[in-house]
Amino acid sequence: MKRAIVTAPGKTDVVDADRPRTGPRDVLVRIRACGICGSDALYIAIGGLPPHHGCMPLGHEAAGEVVEVGSEVTGITVGDHVVIDPMATPGDIIGNGGAQGGLSEYLLIANARRGVGLEVVPDRIPFEVAALNEPMAVALHAANRCNPKPDSKVLIFGAGPIGLGAVLAFRSLGVQHIVVADVIGSRLEKALRVGADAVINSAEENFVERLVAIHGAGEAMFPGKADTDIYLDAAGVPAVIETAIAVAKKGATLGVVAVHKKPVPVDFLSIMSNELTLVGSIGYPTEIFAVTADLVANWQKYALIISHTVDFANLDDALTLAADPGAADKIIVTMN
Image (cartoon, rainbow, N blue to C red; front, side):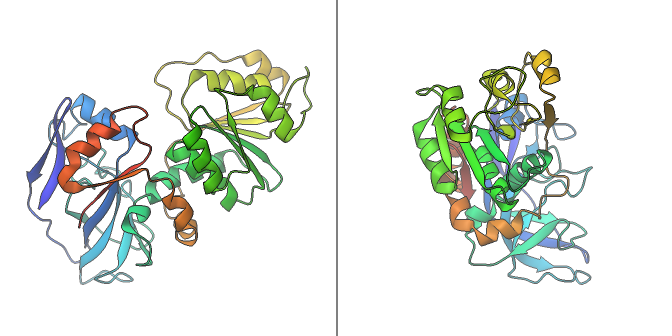
């Protein structure tokens, strides 16, 4: 079979590898789609992670079709379409330093149990949409960390894949009003199509005035605050943190799911005086398959998050596109 690996800093290759052998407790999946994550660019830049530095299989946002089922496996049959939990085996994480990656023709799920290492999805769901399950679990966990209520007013910074996924996640949790802010008009148009109630182009509008106009004025020690309950940073820009804290009303929550590569100054006086809650979010401790039902029910909206699909034969083109900031939003590599 073919497998994409990181071979050196800044270099990837598609190599021949042995097709995994299926044991009695295992399931073999033919991968049909795999998303490219921002972390993949990091792994490529540094030459992969130990213990497979210099030969690390790539890809962890995978979906595919079951082609072999071990004799002791129950609840899974040949032909099932499945999404994968790459984190299910802590010492051998798929596409994150483990011995396997989702950008391969086949993937072995050891000790396979439905709802643990993989989950079945209806075959009417396109594989490229099913491959969104893993990043959408990241978005759902971020929304859960913010502890929303049905009447919460939410502002999401960033209309990239996680920001758009957060729109759908907050909606699935019953939130009634969601605003998205970004500086790219096309992304904001997509946010509205996904289901945001309003958008703010912070490159063209006064962000604070526009947010107050949408959500109303909020109670705080000083005037000029918005009545927004939850702010979620899915942009990773230092100005987002500064802006959210400056406009937040008393008791508001600021969640951070975006990766900030450098320390960000924080106004702790405002956090203290307005009793703000600051929460971080990483991964999906319980959400990897909790998101699956909503993905299946609303797959047409999730499909809007995908900006490009690229055939596995043109993987270099996909990785080059992913490495160019602003050139693409969500890239899915497909395998026929």
